[in-house]
Image 1 (cartoon, rainbow, N blue to C red):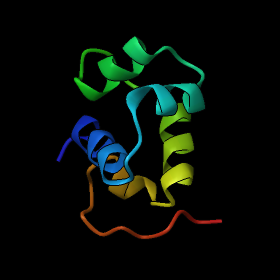
Image 2: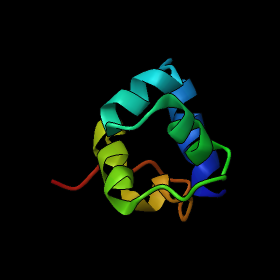
Image 3: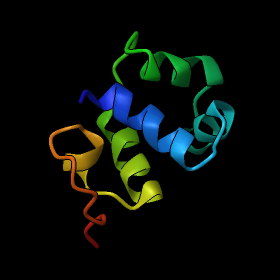
Image 4: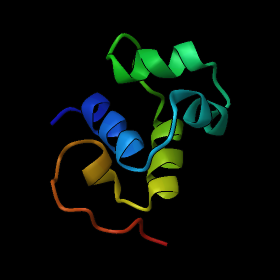
Length: 73
């Protein structure tokens, strides 16, 4: 699974709107939508914020692993 599918899946599974996650990342809703639709690459810093927010490790959020390990502290 590609990261853009995974970030959408995480958002929807946790009942968040795109605008809420966009605010967390300090970007506009349209920019965040572009991340989910793979129109714009998401910056690594934003990926880390999302991994911490959803408490999943980077391998999961990047689509490398299907195992939801917690974000390492």
